[in-house]
Image (cartoon, rainbow, N blue to C red; front, side):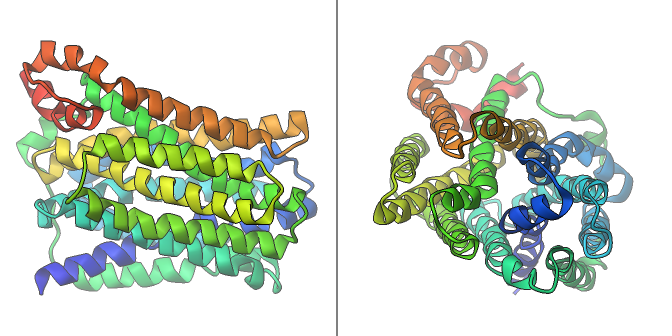
Length: 408
């Protein structure tokens, strides 16, 4: 019963972690027209929260020590609600940017602390819970992608601000179910430990997390505009964005479950990467069937990459505090990398006047992950010299990173 309650808590909180970002792309055309923005400026509205999710995740340790995990999550949920609601009241570009910063800060704190909760209550079922975590965020993304354009018939500020109701609901549920049990995690260990900045494997996790994050947000930001340029109506293009998010959501749950039974993580990373590249090639075509296949394949591949990126730091850590620190570091630097990618893609789109350019960028990003993984055996010497451990894959090395860090 206790575990079922925790699963529900993880689901309802994670549901809110992408609403403030995913509600923007379907409305990009309307926002650009009303506020007279270019592609670079409008890309900031989805990239700023992601970059802030990285920069502000450095505050996770201090928040834990100062307020405890549970109270920090509660405060950030209500902060998230306030920032989202402000979009329905203030519709200037500056106000949207400010709300994006606050949304990014809230998610930056909630994400690693939620991973800490998973580590505490489900240390032997992290794969399953990361799958639930991922599918919950996917449900939020799909819901925002599907209904934002319909809600915008009232006005686009209303369509952005209405999602604050879900954050308020999550905050109330968290308060009722967790309010009486505040996990402070303020032990002497917490005062000594910090981010594993000297661990090489942690930095490899950062790179993996950043590249896969950049690909997801690049697709989320520019898929609608790409399809509109190919002749689809904005409403139809938004429906295909919803399809992408749904596919990504489903496989973010299915693939971690499959990984528990079949194959090495390294092989899954390569397989998902190949699916992404094939999907992007299909998206370059102007054949309707191939466009649908491309959306499905990219959603499949990115659906596998996110839970893998979330799972690796949990497997490298030994306790809830450590899990929050590893996750905090990886998300800090990873989201900074990932958040810059849609901005750079927007700049190139403005320069080349074609949304196909972002597809070439996606291939480059995915190739980086594949090279990192395929050359994984090259990491063995680094890890072996420092930990005396031998691993036969990139994922295996990443899993043993904690031991290497301790021996340093």
